[in-house]
Every structure is written in C-alpha cells, then in structure tokens.
Image (cartoon, rainbow, N blue to C red; front, side, top):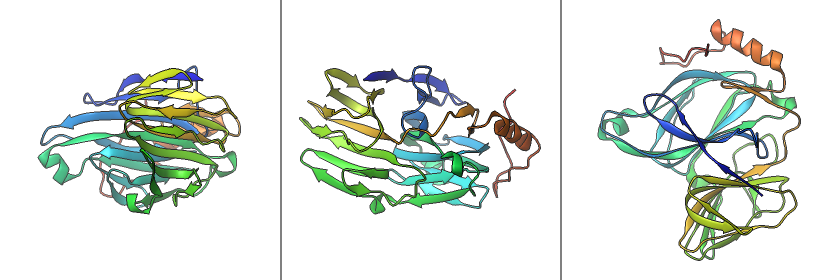
Length: 285
C-alpha cells in the first residue's frame, strides 16, 4: 500500500487545491491521471470561481461536488450547472474548450464550495475521438445503503452496480459515506484501486488515513475500510493505462508530438470557442 498526501496548488485569486495525482511516486490510478481536491472554501457575496476558457485533448474531465455549484460551458455549446452528487463528464478527445464559473445567483449570495476535479486518460484508440459532454444527475446514479455505509457509483462499475455515465475503459469511481463503526470492503474486480479520504478518519490494512490522504493498493489484494467516528471517501481506479501518457498543462497524450500540435493550435485559436465567453487562458510560457 502506498500513502499519498496532497500538494497545495494556487489556481489563482487565492483559490487553493490539493493535488493528489500526478505525483513523482505515483502518476496514475487506473485511468485517473489527475486528481484535485478543492475546498471546503467559503466565498463571500460577490465572489466565486472563474476558470476562463481553456483547452483539453486526450482525456475526459470529471467534475464532482459535495457542496456548492458550478456552471460548465464548452465549445460544443453545452451549458450545464452541476450540483452536489451530479456528474459532469466531458470527453475532450481531439480537442475541446471549456470554462467553469460560479453562477450569478450563487455568486450574489455567497456560498460554500467543495469537490473533486479529476482527469481520466482515454485509451490510445480513443485519444482522437469526437469531443462530447454528458451530464448525469444524482438521481440517475446507483445509490444504496449497506449497513452503516451509503454508496453511490459515479462512473464505471462497483459492487454489482453500474453508473449510466458512458466511459471508454474499465473505471471505478464511487462516493462512500461510512457511519460510525462503518466497514466497507474494497472492490476486488478492478486492476488498480485507490481511496481518497474526503473527511474523517479511516483504517485500512493497518494504516490510519485522515482527511486529504490517498491510499493506493496492490493488485489482487483484499482490503477493507473501517472507521470509528465516520468518514467520507472516494474509491477510484480501473484498468491500468494502455501505455505511457505525457501531461503538459491541460493536454494528455501518448504522443509528445501531439501535445506540440495542441500548443500550436491553441496559440492560433484553432480549437474552438465557448459561446458567450470573451476571455481565455493563454498558453503558459
């Protein structure tokens, strides 16, 4: 078992996130190549998140919230507010541009924001797929109780249930809330598995994990989470990536040359525009 602790990153205007993936000691867990935990952060009235339009290739972005809301817009014309428990799954494929902002009503009254932003690498055969966007509401996701544990399958399959979110490789992504004295065996039918502690404390394999920790487990091993006072965790993983992936800024690809092409395309503004947006994030120096 490997324990990973997040590294703080400032996304601008003092909006801090904790980055769990990628790190030197672990680049991915299943298809997940990027995993940021943000919040809980309280925004005063008039304040909010403004992630200006920016591009992606070769990945799917997965936004999942515990508190608050955000408005997604992309170059396909999608406009979608995501609320806690919903899934926003955007497949970039050959290229897409999107923004994430706090909506006007929430910004006006102030709010609490807490969630996970993750990226899933696409199989090499799908890296140049047509871009797409899908929204799956919380009520459409499998959710059930087993003893002191409430589970929701966000994407992929686990514990005999399958999310309706369309994925392109075997995926494991589960939101689990463990009540006091709760116990939860980890799924055994996925090649790679990890657990991120959103809140509370858990014990697994003789190790104690607390809020903000991630554990990554060896393949074909049995583990169970236990908690005394209660906890919330995200279980993630799936099939190992089919070959090395290069990550540069917002681009993921099995080819360094493809990333260079994406840089040139963004500089020349050949990747599309988000309707209603006039700003953008420039290519880093």
